[in-house]
Length: 216
Ligand code: NAI
Image 1 (cartoon, rainbow, N blue to C red):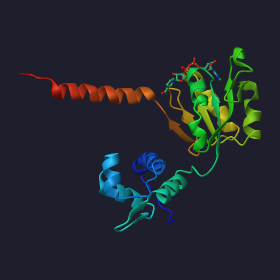
Image 2 (cartoon, rainbow, N blue to C red):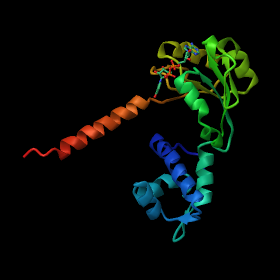
Image 3 (cartoon, rainbow, N blue to C red):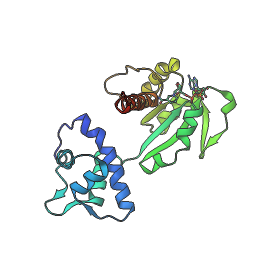
Image 4 (tube, rainbow, N blue to C red):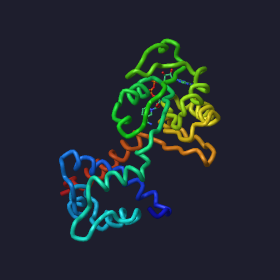
């Protein structure tokens, strides 16, 4: 496949294509036209064609898309055909909830370790993964080929811990702490802020209410 720069907007849409195609596969659908995919996903057919053309198209005139093939290829583009080992730092409410979510593994994200500073958590296991103390972290990362560090700790601790992760070879941070990390450019950071998503929801509720308020 030809290597070229893909816009972040397209990359943001790919997981959604992947999810829809996965659902189609589960329902035994073998092929789909861009028009049908467009109706299901509420994205214009031309947007779909344009997006997928970035990767060589995948479609055939008059046939549509082969669902399995497209699903597999998008999975490869997203790197889901590789295993990504990860550790979660912070085994509180959020860290344990993430650790309990088995579906990440299906996508190749394998939880290898859970770390915390609270000694009361020592020995507890979540889905077979033991909670360890932070003094074991550096050694653990190096021995277990850890690629991703998940930060589920208070924001005041996040920068220090992120630096420890990076110093020991972690390549990417999935950051739930509400702070910017400012790490070296070669470290990939994906910030997740559920409250920002809620604020967008709030904005849309507010706008809807304004548009539907009877002013007469
Ligand atoms: P929590 O208090 O239940 O868990 C935090 C855990 O981090 C505790 O077990 C604590 O012992 C541990 N911890 C504290 N300092 C540490 C350190 N230096 N190294 C390792 N572990 C340490 O809190 P909760 O609800 O799990 O939230 C965790 C963080 O995630 C908070 O910063 C919260 O604001 C944030 N959060 C972010 C969300 C988002 O959408 N980005 C959603 C929910 C929480």
